[in-house]
Image (cartoon, rainbow, N blue to C red; front, side, top):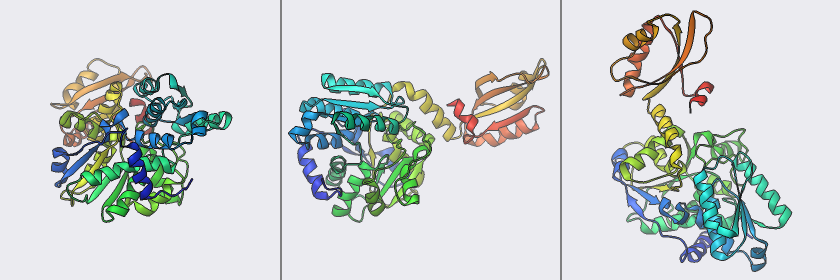
Length: 416
């Protein structure tokens, strides 16, 4: 098997996938168009079978196996979406498979894998991160002889993912000036970049990865794939600790820019997609839109295409999504306030420190240092982000001891 992806392989994958996957819409988005001052189009892979583009690569790889390989069965590691694609392919093609997922994979995704695979697929929890699940899946493959279906670092997977680029280019009324794609291990952006560089070489390609798992940026800085010491798994569809050996050189050679996007900005875009556009996107699905609105100047040349890569989001996570968004846009702040243990101390804080439209959304005594004082964790929500300076001024003028907890503080992680 060749290790270098070509546009011809993507064409072959498109033919193989044509009777199986959906040709997802490429839709104009007025909200982002207004924010950027140029035409913005969304490639809606959230409406794909299994609600993610991942089915393209998984099905293409499994359908490419020989009969002997198919009899051995398949095994994979997945944060959720790739596993759904593998499960769908196994059920469709009559192949047995096992899907290893990290314990952080949302329940909704685990249940979908089991439902799609039916009796053909077993879901196994293998470690706390994707990389631990991958290690467990590789060990299974070595032990049983099952074919390992890589979620990104295999040319057959990348060829399937590259069909997203083939479609969006065919659907776009004009050649896109910029295409923004989410980046995890690099399979999607590598495949799309190979197609665009051959068929639309002037198109600018931007990869967006979560700031808490910026493994492609680390690889580019290091000169090759390198394991991150730790990752934030919130953007589970793109939280990969080490990018692919085969995806990396394609990204290095063909992609114009890789940017890291704060998880709070991703949450804000998730909420806007839902509330303004009626699109349910998972965190990785909102990466491209968040990158476009955060990093592209108003009036950028268009059209700009953002790939909404997936819509498998667990509704139970929306509390955290809202919290991260409010912190990111400056409407929610946390403080440690040391109150004197005497009557009227809290009333003073409410009357003299808090202004109109400033609400306490969290209040918890941490402990009593002594009989005279006791610190409390206080969360405050503002009507406008610009009101923070006035609040900080009133806190400074108050006799109370107040310490702000910045979002970058290790203590802040306990609040989310």
